[in-house]
Length: 107
View 1 (tube, rainbow, N blue to C red):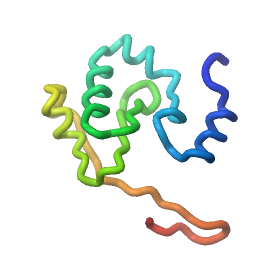
View 2: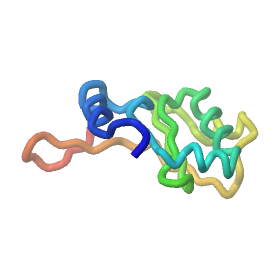
View 3: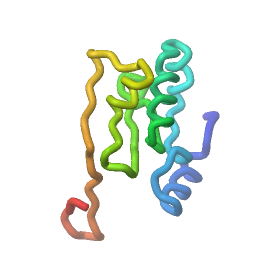
View 4: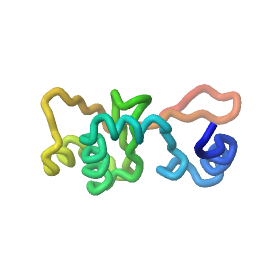
């Protein structure tokens, strides 16, 4: 298949952690062509401190990551004139992790 090598992306993720460089969605460009507003949503979130902004699947959900726990996606979209009442925001959320054979712990 065309696109980035999944093994290389995995290795880059392991070495450097989660970033926009390793988060790839092949369906994002076609979804943006069908609904250009998705580009504006992504740009609004990126310009307001979210380092990773991606579509989930074919575009039903956009998710964004920020190092700032106070980053507010709704405020970012409102300031860009992109917010609609049909949108829903959840967060802030935290990743759950575990060591070896241990049970999961919150960070």
